[in-house]
Length: 127
Image 1 (cartoon, helix red, strand yellow):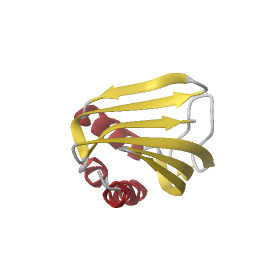
Image 2: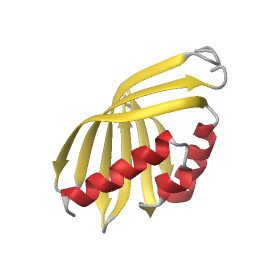
Image 3: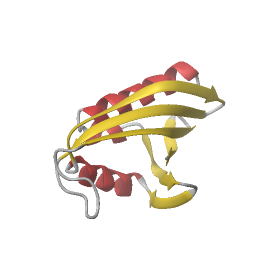
Image 4: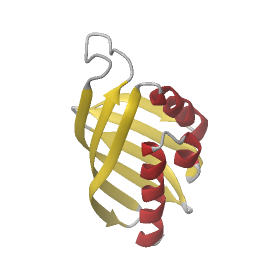
């Protein structure tokens, strides 16, 4: 798959994420896509299938009043794109044993997109 096409898909995903547009986020995902969130080397969220991921995105939309994801660097290798990401968001609700509603959260992480047959087949968010 061409870098230009992969970049366009990721840019549209980020734009949809920032607008809380779940349909826009899932439009270029493979039906059997996988998602993993990895923190300190441990997988703490693992989802299989576009529907499961879409459900997670819809739940996540309720967590923030405002949010912005910005890609600060991209590396392309075959059908894999590694993105360095800056995220900031204002919480809409309290997190148990954590930050409270109205607090600003800032995170720097890595998000890796894997492509197959013109679709995103896997996403790994690594903190």
